[in-house]
View 1 (cartoon, helix red, strand yellow):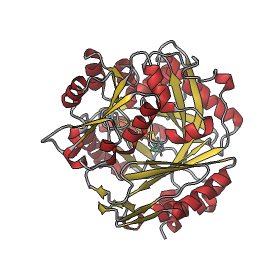
View 2 (cartoon, helix red, strand yellow):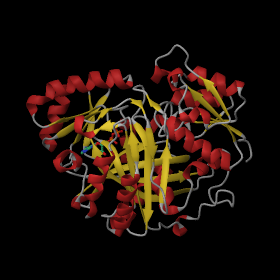
View 3 (spheres, helix red, strand yellow):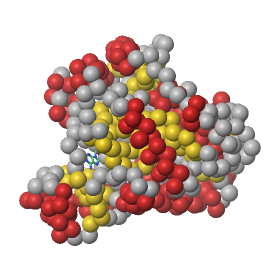
View 4 (cartoon, helix red, strand yellow):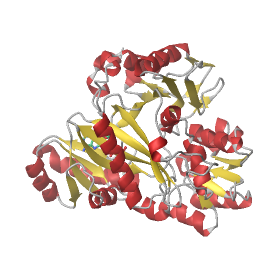
Length: 456
Ligand code: ADP
């Protein structure tokens, strides 16, 4: 490496461990931070050094303690910080503070976070780049929404400009719901994301969610690593992801990937990012960019053989994408091989409204074998799952030459799991894998919410 010999991960759980693994393979030393509540969390023990952060703060706020994290980074003399996903990963102030302190922020530049951290600005950029967006507009007054609805028809969706993670969205199916939905959307946006700015979009009927993985270096080289299909969602949150999509025509795949590349090139994007689209009736519409590593990057790694996290480290260290060190081929030579599926195993109880369960894991045995990848956070015997953080236990990814075989491998793997002491969604995920609509690629974003037989 040139400058990066020690990295702090400003995150927890599986993604912190994922980054530590990438670093260790490159002989980069690693630093973990952990909150008091995470004292026995696995990520703490997976780094070369670990420091308590956010003492006295609420559990979530510990990982948002910008000055506390910067202080640890300086004291432990790290060269760079990887923000993971969630927490500070899209925080412009944090990226700027890193820059000020001479610490490399492993991600895009503050200017790019400025555009893509705000979905209204991101939509405007997409329009400038001549990429189709879902019909929509910024709104200030109820009247603006009424006017919009009279033009495009119900249903419509009100979204928080700074929203994320499937939160801060409200569907409005008719005019009588409008006033309440608007005021609730604004107040939810304010309390969850610190700004009550909202915008409105036409709510597309049963679309697929297709997203394109991008990697870009500081010299203007930018490639896509094809798409992921993340349509299997519950309440707008991804549950199962597939790469590549089983239902896109070659023509549409090319158009979507080209659009993603154009958008990111137009903003001189750097590092890893994902451009998200909805696809309905063979048309695609931009919805947002995630300017960071995503939970589901694993499946793109499985089908391309490219280590996205290590690529992030090299890019941040100043390497050319196509240099021997990173070794990313030119776009025309990047291809995909086989199919990969990722299931998010969580500690949620599907038979009780997906309520997160907490407590001690008494028994933990996972699957394995050829074509299986496991990215676990606190999934191990003796682990105590607290109520303070997200409910992701382990990401199970399978790879095979065909989609059907990858799904069969996933079923076999899920069946091999034995987790006792805490409820999980494993049986539910098995039902998804075995459902004819899933196997035939006939699912869209409404699949889980409209398929009661998955809940048995
Ligand atoms: P977040 O940033 O919270 O993930 P997104 O804007 O990416 O929010 O949307 C998440 C999901 O919500 C999409 O994958 C899709 O299922 C649904 N969704 C968002 N906008 C629309 C829309 N205009 N029409 C239909 N579904 C939508």
